[in-house]
Length: 111
Length: 296
Image 1 (cartoon, rainbow over the protein chains, first blue to last red):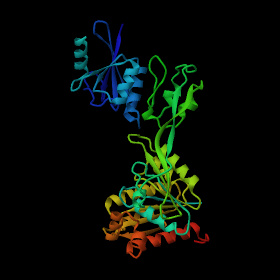
Image 2 (spheres, chains in turn red, blue; image 1 turned 180 degrees about the vertical axis):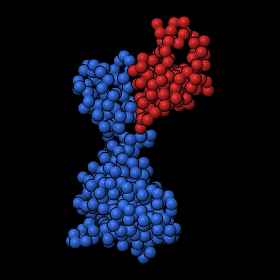
Image 3 (cartoon, rainbow over the protein chains, first blue to last red; image 1 turned 45 degrees about the vertical axis):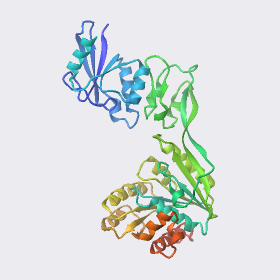
Image 4 (spheres, each protein chain N blue to C red; image 1 turned 30 degrees about the vertical axis):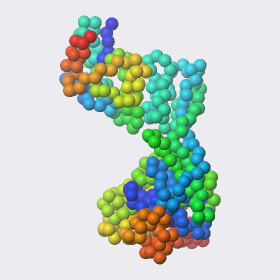
């Protein structure tokens, strides 16, 4: 079964670095990964939390839910996003200072 | 009933100073309700020498509850929620985050299945306190609960209580800034007095508040508090741009500070002070404008 993994990013893409903030990040880079860890697709979606007046964390997580994401890799989520991820059953993995590609490798390696 | 609103944009210009002194002066002839709508930091009672606020009531705001016997998990409520207070998980029912809810009721009206129940949460409190020695003066105070983000519902609530209490004059003291809660405080006023100071920051924030009073079509005057500290040429230019009718000065003077230290309005503490005299002038003009024969 392919899995969808979201990365918290600025401009998005495999070579973009993980963005420092969760709810207010400009984009999510959504990578679909096959059973053997191969990349099936890469998509960049806007994060509605980026421009939200309030509730950015919730809006960001809602977007991840709607995109069918199982795991999100990025900075530590804020308190609202944290609770929302719990409610949504989305696993959150903290990683900063690396590119999406590196983060993906590390994550798959740790599995 | 007449409505006079004291505002100003910048914090610390002397909004409460002007409002409390005008309240005391108006109370010599009128029944005055002074509404302290600076719900983040209400302190008019301190300036008036009121030790304890009384007649507390809760300021409530709508909060949605999900009727799980009716909810179909369609997610419309989460979509219409502007503040992101409702999350639609992949399975299960919508999840409400009370801290984020502004009480707008959009979800209540949007739900096609009437599955939203009308609950409420307490965002703050209002108080109605009679002044201990000035018979005609009643203070209505709004207090936002610590940590709450949403001021507008509290301001609406407290303003309503003040309106119900007022008979002759409703004098509103707003908080600083130009947010939604300030517009709510300004709404329906007969006269707005914007308090500023002769500094670049005072000028900047004066323009911000005048833009709003101008847009709302409100009759607006300006008080330059701490007058004498600096130039007001640019203030005057800005006032012209936004059709300010007239402006006044209250001088930068020790008497104003002394009255603060004593906790007594300066018009009572030192009635002969030039600071007090500058306030008499403002009150007299406002009195004529609000209660005059209408020929002004």
